[in-house]
Length: 473
Image (tube, rainbow, N blue to C red; front, top):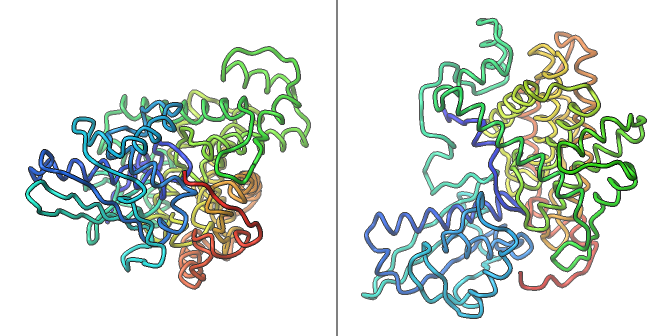
């Protein structure tokens, strides 16, 4: 059984897509390390990169080419200065070379050596890319990777589990497993997850990792609520979060993210304003994501705004306890995402947007229900309700950009998560006719039945409604 840590589900990275940006970026880093292990790194005289399937069809809009170049150059998505990315890419294009692994200047002309094979899809997964190293002696070394959603990557036949294979005290493959372990051992959902996390990390490392994850989410919302202008890519999408935040908060003073949130709490918003704030939080994250900013996959970049928005709803409008509530929320949400990844998919290229916004909404609903005092059964019921009402949601990005309808869909996913948690807390789970495992199975069946044109290819749905020429990114 795959052993997936909460920290595999929540990854810090750069937008706009976990499968089309973060995954290829990590694959590029990994292939460089692979060449080192093979002993051919110093003999690499040239590089070719082939993108296939969905990566090729929407790769320009998702900035896949830029991610590959940055990964080959040893830039890291967690630590790189996102402000310098356009300059770095322009330098590679101008010089027609890159600093392989951060150490060796190697010829690389993106216009020639990076190919978008949009008519070819490899059978293992729609998101595929092959790196070919041309060696000084005339030899060739090639490696193919698959970006399978949420920033996870693998080679064909390789396990797609995130963390190292381990024997967990509570191996969970389904929601029923989660409920059974909790009931048998008198543990809440986050307590079950915590004990599994101890297999990989010390308590101090878990606390620090969750703090870091939450801080990255919070700072992303704050940046997005204070950034204005037009998003890159050619669609002319105007940022809205900053205008919305300013209109609601007025002249209230603040200096940083924490004092900003304190000002929001003190404003005593009406129901309508609360709804607007939740939407504002979600917009902020995904506007940052669309602008090549740093976000946390939750479980993907395209759905990164849902969980921060719902968590901030809990902290700002439900008298939430940040010191302890954030950890309970993230542990619970992360496990729901892990279960869905194991038994279905979190890749829009495999399942449409139900596998991204739908999953993030289910995760957020579960986290909120847990923090508001729900039982384990109510927690999984909240996830079931949220996922159920995203079934069949297509992924149809206009021009292949994670902007229309992706940004607004995060607001819808957040509001649905809050509604799902509210309904679950007011319900008796034993009366439910459909369980979370059944809905996950149905989501996977729906994904298999869905036409490929609705799976992140920009060949169907809303993607056909706007004619736009996307410039080379």
